[in-house]
Length: 99
Image (tube, rainbow, N blue to C red; front, side, top):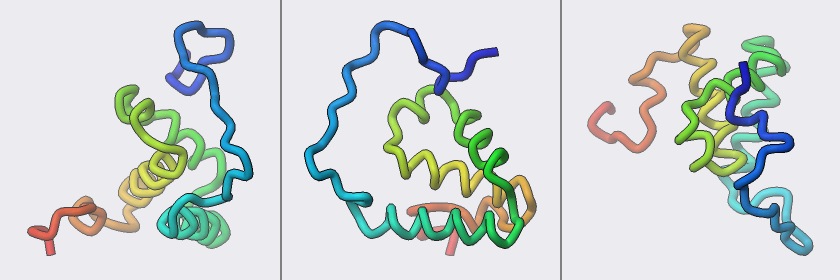
């Protein structure tokens, strides 16, 4: 079964535009997500294969609308919930009513 990330050879996607001298991170939160993922993998909360699978399981609309590190963050929160490390309420983003 193909997933949305498996687009090799498919037509209809725009060309990839490379940014000259592109920085590794465009915002501080991206660096935080990168570091968090590394720490969680190193601590054995999940492994790299599980992380990749969690990204690939994102709903098509969410996957296509998300930036690179937004997909990373979505995968991390998915895995933390699935592994019982954090509840859905703990992971609620931008919902001040939950706190």
